[in-house]
Amino acid sequence: MKSIKEIKNIKGKIVLVRVDFNVPIKDGKVEDDFRIKKALPTIKFLQKMGAKIVLITHLGKGGESLLPVSVALNNFIKTKFIPDILGKDACDAIFNMKNKEVILLENLRNNMGEQSKDKNFAKNLSKLGDFYVNEAFSVSHREDASIVLLPKLMPAYAGFQLTEEVKNLSLVFKKPKKPFLFILGGAKFSTKMPLIQKYLKLADNVVIGGALANDFIKAKGYEVGQSLTSDSKGIEKILKNKKLILPIDVVVVSSRKLINKKISEIKKDEMILDLGVESVKNIESHIEKSKLILWNGPLGKYENGGDVATKNILKFIGKLKATSIIGGGDIVAVVSESKMENKFTFVSTGGGATLDFLANGTLPGIKALR
Image (cartoon, rainbow, N blue to C red; front, side, top):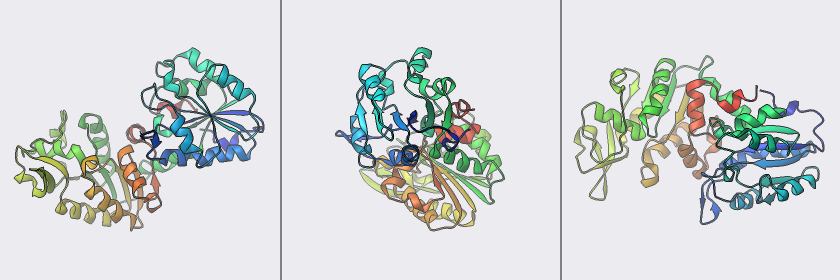
């Protein structure tokens, strides 16, 4: 990939920057600005070089306005919001831009051409600028028009955050430090199975938490009650792998009370909410011995109060000198909320993109830049 540092004669030129400002919004306000802040170094670099910057992004599934995002962005950098994508308002605003000015166009998914990978939509977008920059690692696993078609139609470069994502996540492939511990939470066993199989070979141990752990507990013959489970076809192939670190105990919701129980004590009317005290201690003992820790996904149902294990283990890792890489949309939200971003070697902006990159070593959006 070519870095934006390699762009020549950029002063006065229009740069289309594909960011991922698909951030949580509640009551018209951005709840978590982590992804916005991570794009700022690229935007400020382009300003310093005298470019005209046009930001393009999606939000939700389409139909939503980026106005609240524009308000949040203006807390960091002066930005003009244009509630238009390819119409007269957008074209006029871009035509009249001054050097170093920043414009944010409306939600790309408000145009059906974005997700349908429409060539004409991409072609019309390309006419808006002189250069393309991908600063949207977290959506680069999608084959959307602005991700895979646009960089083929104009000189294309990688933003600083995208470059850092590739560099840091690649550490787990290229002679990883040993002992290497992989922690995997979240849900959807079927999508995580290839990842588990891969890291049972690459890592020294693999910790399983979150709803994924429920599938393993159930596969071992224990009751999981009302807990979330998924299609765990093929789990028996890895269930007895000695590298796996599975829960010893869990926190369940029982008659509206939170109770710490051994996995053999779970009842049919109970629901697993989080990892238990002994499970956390066991994981921490493995973390202490590790030189490289890769973690994706929360260890409990954090949105319902099952965030204790995740927060305690994050704090534990934050005190160590080991190389620590944290990723996955939900766990990044916990890191951001707890203001712990600087406690780790690297915090990825990606959710599904991080998982796909860890499994495949690349993404459609990265391939399109080559």
